[in-house]
Length: 415
Image 1 (cartoon, rainbow, N blue to C red):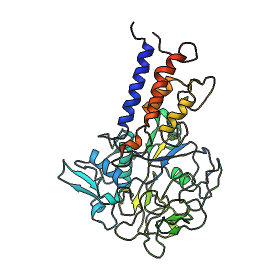
Image 2 (tube, rainbow, N blue to C red):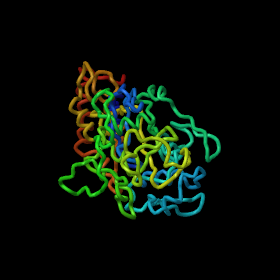
Image 3 (cartoon, helix red, strand yellow):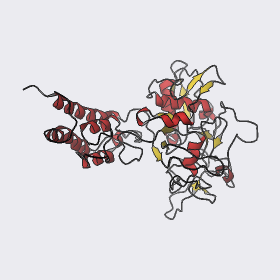
């Protein structure tokens, strides 16, 4: 008897699930956190109001992530994405370039892989974002979210406005360098609804944080940051922290190191935010904004060992992310299975909003599997579904789908 088209579809979905499971760990993966409360009121500084939900990097872009970017697009490096200061500066992020133009390769010292990249310009950050938007690999750095034209060092950049950002949908999302409002909200807003309530510091407090890095104490009260107190808190050779080192010191939305460590570029090209390891606690305040030091206006090609960046993704919604934690992983698969076959209204797992949870939703989950999941170097299994989850989903697609198709409300492929 010929196989029905419906059966073929279910088999293809199963293949998709398993293919996704073995491929998601290739390339750069960035931990993200959701920032909701759209339409919140601005702070008294005039910043922080955002009319849509989005995601922002939980951590600053790391040296390992940036080195992967360089290896993908900078064999000749016509745009100066690499700075020799990354390797030679005492407090550089220790990315080293080897070889000759046309065959450059890049590596990062193992102790620096999870520390923030530094010595990057505003243009470098935008090009990294374009690379993410274009699917990584050898994707373009000049087109994507931002259109970069002209001749350096002062390129012309086309920037999407807040109004344009608000029109992006889940199926048409964009990687971005956070706008100043997006960055500010993630750092200082109290995450208490669409309010105008903000903390003074990005560690969720109004009091200055404690400079230091010894987070092994069981009585750690949190509110720590890497900034200049009476001296540089992290001695040579590191100067910057590993991501997430300051436990209990995240913002209300779950970001780390938006205060201290390295200043961060945002889309407003003359503005840095957050302070750094060589600036006092006042630089971490919500009121601290603008250029760098007292040497005049900040220029977009500026590079220094205490400046880095983080990325964002607009809008916040990710197809397949049932619990809105910024990741599509085992938890989402279990949620979909728990609600399988539910009809008549929205439920967690109805990714295409057709009021029924079925094989089409399974396909969406598979297509986005691993989004936002951070994979530890040398341990790709952390992004691969648990065997029990894969088996469960496969059975749902092959067995439950067939059973429900006999008489229940399930979208079917016509024979």
